[in-house]
Image 1: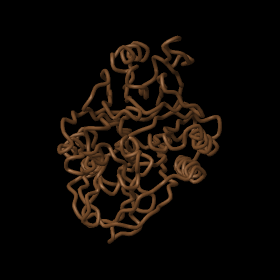
Image 2: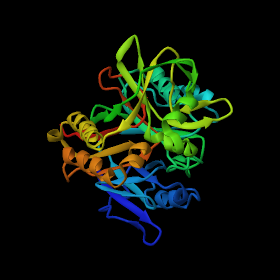
Image 3: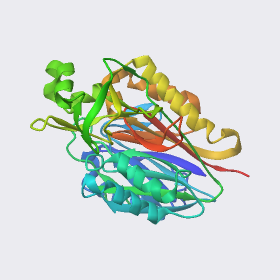
Length: 383
């Protein structure tokens, strides 16, 4: 396996050496700001540059390239696999209520006896990420590694784009399947947020829409905690995510980020399910713990690929936009913490998302996460 990083900026166009790999690359991953992707011209340039490759990418809340973050460039990597087969699947995501159906369709397109892993990118606003993940895993099984994320649009929450062998567009889910015995995929996901305030029971919800906590309108509670910042909802809610727990499985805790609010119904729409009967608690960030969480996720992903037994690899970092908004200039801390686990020889790229997809650490079951750093390491075994 070989990996070449390239990037695009308006002033310079595409830059980066491919060392003659342009004709050999069979997968290109790219992440960029929505405005740079919307015309489709950047996709067409990648298609001309890498004619034999599957090309998969999305809009973001910032692009990650090694230890750097950019808001106006496009970060990309061209991967050449030696002994791994690839298959790309795309499905429209016309409505959040059809998220599970969309996931099942993706799963059917990618299912196979030698399927080893899936990396998926989804529309970030028009999807219930929990249902999407459940649909895919329900078809391919929980033993298949499933990672990825929901596309972003900075803190605007207006429109997100995904492309899978096509120009990026709205309301699309695209995924790449990896097949064979040579592929190695490591993954890790960690948060670093602190809980505060009382635990409250989710007394009324439907899917990913939360109506009441302890019998009180959910939006009323959030507005009380946010004070003057409530005017900036849903964006300001990114700084105060919600941890939810299944009382029957207390170790199975998840974090949820707000995508939209309905001030008339006093409800809040999250990136994934918020089941009735579960407990919830507000959270706030701790800079040092957030950075340490990124290092923990990278450590788990690195351990999953056994760096001593491969030739070439790449690490894909998907972190939540809420972490970036909170950490500000200290966002670099989490990238450096992740980079320290891989070392300079392994290229790293990724994006800030509206939701992260990775197996849950304690249970191993793939789920949608929010406010985490999720890391996927990909390589091929040499022997």
